Image (tube, rainbow, N blue to C red):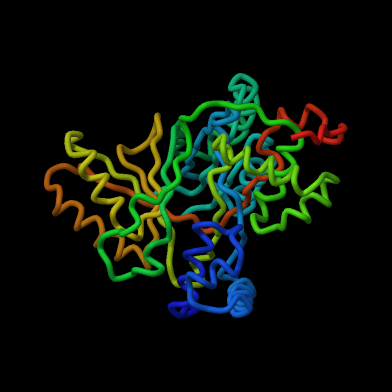
Length: 341
């Protein structure tokens, strides 16, 4: 486990709020010189605490739907499990694929525009592996709300002080995106801190064009922000997916507000299908803290909760950037780009 001092925690917090901001800007907020910020960030990268800087984007703004599958395995050897995972990773529609620990074994998210084309591919997959799934949970992802890593700088508080600072994904107006936009998004999705001048050089356009395009993607809500992927294992934390099933739906909104105020809650999900009434991502030391957290919720809202379940991802097999929009690639990624703003 790596122990972070207060300065390191603040650096991670502010990088997650906006990982494209300058180190000088972060230094002013943390109270350190720019050069010290650079050294500390590099050390956090070398130690594996910072996995990557990435861009938050909303595919629903481009007319895409997100499908979610959870799998509980049976009769599977390690080699067969690897084969199933490999097929999920190779699927051109898959966005994320994770091995999990808890009440499910695998999770996979797919980004689609034509559900009929996806259904043909998915039927082949199920025909091949159906006997190895004791349970399959399917749902449509509708929207989500992502909050800051507030616990990094306020670990003792039981209430989030920055509750109004969040990003919403899903449910907005739809827009079109051309090849240049796609290329820019591909680059900054994997490295949100890549300088504009380097992006411009790589795509053979001007820096003003890149700046204008990025601002436009932000304005349209295709880009929601720039965050930080933290390896919480290094900090002795786990990120849990928490599903709460309600007995009394009348307390839903009050309970949701109460839960979101906890600084350890990262995200809230809203889905349709095989899913819970309330869904969250929460970052805690271990399952004992998770049960303690739920005990407090149950005491606050007696007789409102039927039950709850949880799991955590133990290995990410895929986080796709380039294949997020398969039909855009069919337009010809290498064709001449119109560089006008």
